[in-house]
Structures are given as C-alpha cells and as structure tokens.
Image 1 (cartoon, one colour):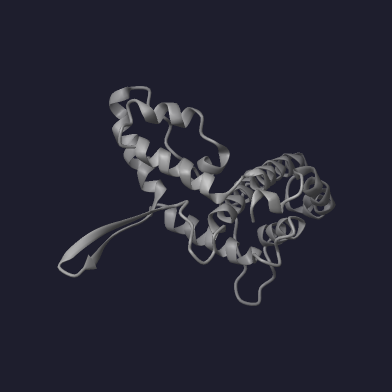
Image 2 (cartoon, helix red, strand yellow):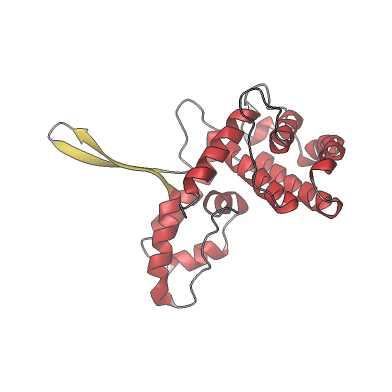
Length: 217
C-alpha cells in the first residue's frame, strides 16, 4: 500500500458518500456531518502518506527529542502531523497539556516517551543481555503497513466516539456487528483494501490496545 497504489482522495470521498447515509442512524443528526468530515480527513491522510517509513521517521525524531525536552521537543510538538499525534493522543487516554514551565518538560517527556515505545525488554544473548526497544511505528517484517492501518482505525474510532458520545466496541461470538465494525468495514471496502486487510482484525487490535491503555481505577 504505497502512495502510488491509491487514487486521488476525491475518488474515495465520492465512494464514502454512498455509505454516509447508512451511518446516519448511528449518530445524532447534528453530529453526522462532523463525523463524515473527520473520516474524510483520516482517509485523505491515509492515501496521501507516502510510505510507512515516513511515519516511522517522524516517531523516531520525536522519541529522540524526548531526551532533550527543554529545546527540541516543544518545537517538534508544535508541528506534529495528525498521523503521529493519533499514535500518542487518544480520546480514552488524552496526552497531558504541554507544560508552560520549562522545568516541567522532563516529566511530560517521560510520559510521551512511554507512549512511543511499544516494547521495552531485556533479551538474553549468551552471557550478556541486550535491551530491545520497539517504537509504535516500527513495521512488522510480515505485515509492512500494519501501523498505517492502525492509525487509520484509531482516527475513525476517535471520530466515532466524538460523534456518538460512546466508546467503540466490538462484537463477540455470533453477536451482530457493532456500528463501529460496520463503519470500519465500509471504509476498508471503499478504500478497496478489504481484499488484503481485514477490517475486523484491526478493530480488535484497536480495542485491545485501548483497553490496555486505560488506567485502572
């Protein structure tokens, strides 16, 4: 799924309009158009992103800036793109407000870095141990564009929660698809990627990641 694999965003917007009417019943009337505009924005970024390596590079730059929070980090955050922001800032676990006092940036940088790291463990290598850290944007060797799809589903979920006032859910067993599952499947079909990426798989990934991120009461 390289940028060259996709058509102009307007092509997909026209297809999405055909699905919009079917989604209207999931939201209050005043919120339906807002939801659709946010979906269009997510789709626009998805098809326009040159390559997943661009996302990985941006996350790596942000991660390195966390080590020098009083200088580099504020400038990078001020120019943060939506696809990177959606990896670290979630409706169910919002990123804290940026500090006004430079002395408070250290704690903020620690919180930010914890959201950028998906794996942090020690690996035994004979008599030595090596620290293995994996960032949220680093691609799997077998599913190269998984992170890009995760970002798309995360942004759809944020739009859904904002419009419906409810968190996204997934179906269990033989129960009917939830509204969020139906919407995500429609969007994958309209993007013409449903033959290579299963929408429900990414809904499950998103819900699991969200549930792991929600702090215990």
